[in-house]
Length: 240
Image 1 (cartoon, one colour):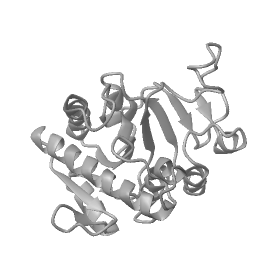
Image 2 (cartoon, helix red, strand yellow; image 1 turned 180 degrees about the horizontal axis):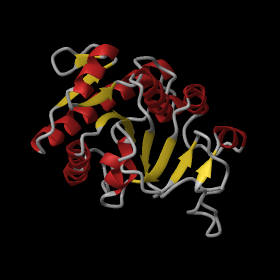
Image 3 (spheres, one colour; image 1 turned 135 degrees about the horizontal axis):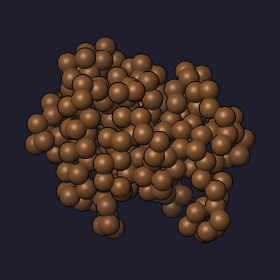
């Protein structure tokens, strides 16, 4: 066992599976089963979930919607995903709490750092919804911020690809996948692992980021247990 407290970053798109929009219950249940397996090993896990399967603020803003308004709508979409994931986790027997950065007292707790840490210590999964509560910041930045606040040892970023490449592997069949990367290389080469604000936060707090493919069954458990299944960014890594 390598880690004791981790943060899992899920994109909203991951929850819709092969659907064009919304939430695929089969995918959500699969994620819940994997998280339950992690929890059964005594590992504390917090989750930040995006909302792109329901609403993307940046896309709406580019179509003419006020950016701040669009971002707030996107934050509400993340709470919908968080509550859905909570239900799946509790059906899998895992006690779970949703904490929202925007007050929604009927469906979620307010985000309180000390309360979140206490939940983790009691072996409850904590899902952070509504991003950071502020427009113009991504859920990747929220993941870096919450990881620093709760003293998470690592961020696991679950994506649609099996790591970080030097170019788009869908367009370039000769694209090279990195095993390890430094924060500086990610920023200098604009590799888009996370947005630059998130990378800077992780660098300042020395929080490594593991990027891996969520679509492979069992990968969440393998990643948390320390298997090399993707690309590790940060820490004392060299570029390889």
